[in-house]
Picture (cartoon, rainbow, N blue to C red):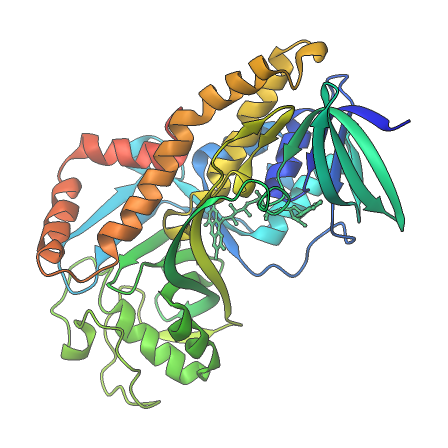
Length: 418
Ligand SMILES: Cc1cc2nc3c(=O)[nH]c(=O)nc-3n(C[C@H](O)[C@H](O)[C@H](O)COP(=O)(O)OP(=O)(O)OC[C@H]3O[C@@H](n4cnc5c(N)ncnc54)[C@H](O)[C@@H]3O)c2cc1C
């Protein structure tokens, strides 16, 4: 006889954990299965930009107060390398205290887990799910735990595993941008608290997210180039970064020194080769922490639902991190799914009608998030001759259209359903 539950969540990453929390205290039997042994993942180096709307959801999940050292974003400067077009999004123009926040993935994850431990949710760590089958009116999960194989029947299985379990049977649609994301913490001489930078270059976007005494850097480049950049010594890397970022972000945009204006990913000058450093709006980059690399692709599951099964978070869609939308979208998946589950009688959880209600509820926000992110990468990451001036003009135009700016900023903060 298999064990039974109402909702089984495969994957205790931030999205799966958020769903479990949103279902707590409702007399439902919810089981969360997480493959990792350790309760807290201490190794993932990425920082996340969290939208203001996500903060509101995390507050409702009682996870927000437990996140230490969060840095707020009050302004986002968007610029394009080699052009003067730019726009700035400001929290004060949107009547919110902050547009978003920067925090380590591990801190978010730990806070969600802490809230989970104080709840009635059954969490199994070191429980790797190896199979998901649907028959006899339920989903049956096979998992290994403490050296033994178990089976669990669930009215609904929610796959929040980042996109592995169902990949072979239901291959996702993949757009390979040919890019990797290089991340690291950087320090500079004029860090501006609360100001984030999104800088588009022909090789891909780069972001500086304000965090503590400096910035979390996300720099995109072709896979091979990014791998090569991991091997550079700090001085060489910092010199490159100074050139790549150029003088963007200054209140008054300055004429660029010759080596700052190139749209090519120039080879770095010899270490110490800068007599006059470029002016970046953050001063000179002075130190860099450990660098790591992630391959960047758009992956989208062809279907969000199967009988008694729903995909959420990265299992449903994995986005390029250009606009910091991946987790924010996944959190909204989790929140809306919890509302749909709680709106249905227990007998109808996992039914075809319930799955359709969820699919319909997420269509607009999901498609908008995918299109927005993919469009940004395609439009801004190339050096086609006519596109450069058009992009520059578009950024400047946006800067003078308060309603359009508000629309873009609200989409980033709350999604298309917000
Ligand atoms: C460089 C980079 C920067 C990013 N920056 C941002 C940002 O600024 N803002 C933003 O919103 N998003 C950002 N993202 C995206 C964000 O990290 C993801 O959207 C988010 O981590 C997705 O969470 P998830 O819970 O769906 O999946 P994951 O974080 O992948 O978690 C999946 C979990 O499932 C577990 N699991 C896997 N297989 C099984 C199995 N068979 N059985 C049981 N458990 C299993 C795993 O151990 C893991 O804990 C960034 C991503 C990258 C790569």
